[in-house]
Amino acid sequence: MTRLEDGMVPFIALTGGFVVLRLVGLAGVDVLDAWQPALRGALALMFVFTGVPHFLPSWRRDFVAMIPPVFPRPALLVTLTGVLELAGAAGLLFPGTAPYAAIGLALLMIAMFPANVSAARRGLTLAGKPVTPLPARTALQVLFIAAAVAAAA
Image (tube, rainbow, N blue to C red; front, side, top):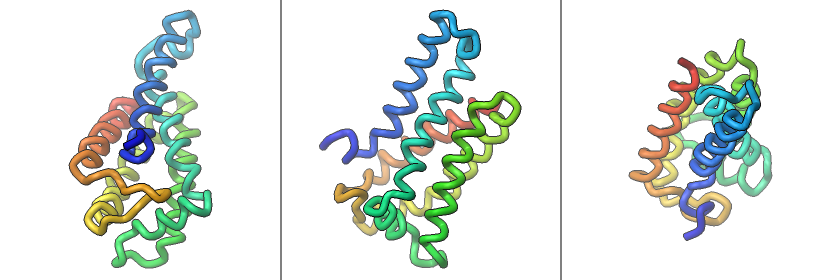
């Protein structure tokens, strides 16, 4: 399995982004010279990677299919979550809005988790590849939510 197939792109964006931004801070870029601004930047990067595909036709079809059948207007929900992810990513980049954006994104990830559970249980694909298995997806989701909460503090 490639990293894309096993759902690791957001994890790599978060952890790799954090390491790079923290190193940039240590090299003298004052705005990144602490763990929290580096974490906020890394979360923003992760949400750009996860938000943009909501608007790419092949990915969008798969995201719409992931929405549990009980929810009405799945295409609208995919659009809304994509907009919220991208707006949250932008909000993380400004100190005044970062804590609110981080909490909003944590809540969004909690709200979107049922779609991930539904997709895993129904054996759906994302961009032609199997969705991340539920145990791994759950662990990643907990990590992502914890990162957002830490970024909000």
